[in-house]
Length: 573
Image (tube, rainbow, N blue to C red; front, side, top):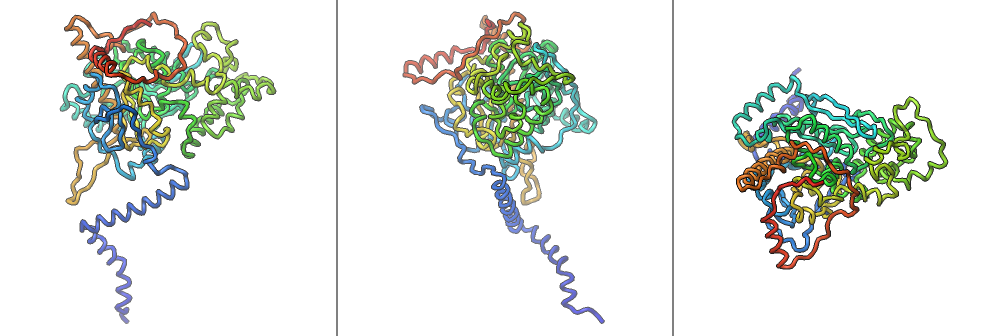
């Protein structure tokens, strides 16, 4: 007997529903409403996840404020607005104007929208779980330092076979570009890009992507790993303080000695800016760097450690730091309270326990000395009495632990010697960065008064995110932005910035030579070998000069000084 009609209809309902859904999706209105429904459901799920993980969602609480007396005129303004267009906050120097005229990536970028543009998703993707970039191959150099410590330098030496086709395609596009697209066109030898990771160490997805892009543009890429991080052996019971540039200074000198004719530039990632900015301030005009950039930098170190960070990021950074300390726990027990450090629940307490004598003396007197035999470390290296006189002199005040938390930042604040910086520094920040303090705390006065500091900020981008929009499908089935670039916007800006700075300095050198006053010293900073350098001087505890009210007469004097300012560097230190 044949089955009833209703049974046949019920059996065909799933197939009929699927067929009608496919037909409905061909209608633009239905497709639009479907996208909205899926987006609303996804946003609701993400909202619940953020509430559970205690992640901040109100980006408008991190707004920029208007400085007193700032007129707010476009990109070269002191008024930072939360608009879609990136804002360049700086002193209107010749370099800043040249950068605005020739840097096309400073135009309004097509940054990704939600969900890829969510600050937390961008941050986690760039630091933890981004797209794998294992096609680059590195070779490691271990550099022995003056105090017996070791830092690692990873040189990008090439790509694997999987990247051959993509590399050839990029080379084909490169041939059609103009001669001024890459920095290597301005030098006889390829420039060297020094990358400085986060202060807790390791290679993030963000850093690997920058290595890829820089290598494709003709840079020699080298990654600086501080002692005890990224598999670098720790041979002394001494870790690197947050803003201690001594190790980086020796690494830069070593890189310059290997490639004395190459231009040397540097990029820091996130909290790695503490070491880079300290190095630029302490070395002043004696640095081998020609230009520098900092992506999502920590400009105020003490404030960053004292500001509450979302629990997910705080515990992630603490876990990474505690793993490094726990690896050498038996050797460090003779010089600090390891158990107390491992029990810390904040980055401030952990840093204070490691480097401040006020925290170290709490239980050290009651603990007997622990032998470090067969540990590979010299436990007395942290004590100034056990150091050789030359090493103690080279370390200076850092041969002794800081007296307290404030003393620690008197010698480690990244901008403590900002007035001594003598190379252009581009800082790229985002208003919705979840790892940094509120944007209103940034030292805008520094960027408005210093010739060498430039601040480029956007409304969104997360921490080391700045993901560009992907290809979007239009109603006709075509992509809306076929010619748009994909990847990380900050990488594009940084590499183009180095090219423009090199072009600007060559132009200044050429104009100065034609006027009988050569300016080639500044543009060839990475090529000059300075052997008779003065000993490091005692650092000032102040952060920067206090802003002063200007009269009309003083404003005219400043304008005249701006016209007479040149980018020539004098090596007097």
